[in-house]
Image (tube, rainbow, N blue to C red; front, top):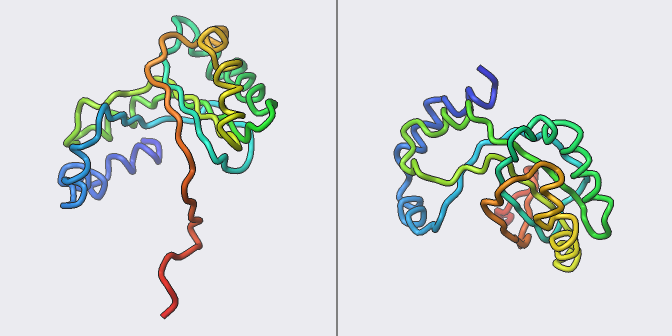
Length: 171
C-alpha cells in the first residue's frame, strides 16, 4: 500500500471522518456541492504562491488520459506559467485507490469527485482572466485532452502561515 493510501486507511484518519468534532458538525452540513478528491500530481510548473487561484475540474476525453499524465500535461502547465502574471500551474489526477480508502465510513459519501484538476496560481485577477479566456478556454483545454468541465472556481489568498510560524502571542 502506498504511503498516502496508508494514511487514509489509518485508524486516526477514519476516526476523524466517522465522527466529526462538534465544530465540524456545525459547518460541514452547510457546504453546498462539496467536492472531495484525493489526487496525484501529474505535472507542476512554477514557484511561489499566487494571490489568486483558478481551479478547473474536468473529465479527460476518451483515450487522452495517458497524454495528460505525460507530455500534454507538462506542456499545458509550462505554457500557462510562461504567461505574464501566472506563478504556478498544477495538473492533478484523482487517485482512485486512495479515494476508496478515504471514503470508508466517511459521513459525506456523495461528494463530487474531480477526475482531473487544473490549479492555476496568478498574481492578480487580471492575469488569471487572461489565462481563463485564452489558454484555459474550453477549446484550449480540449486540445490537451480535456472533456467535460465539471467545475470552475476562483479563489483569493487572504492569509498564509508557514509551518514554522506561530499565531500565539508572546507570553
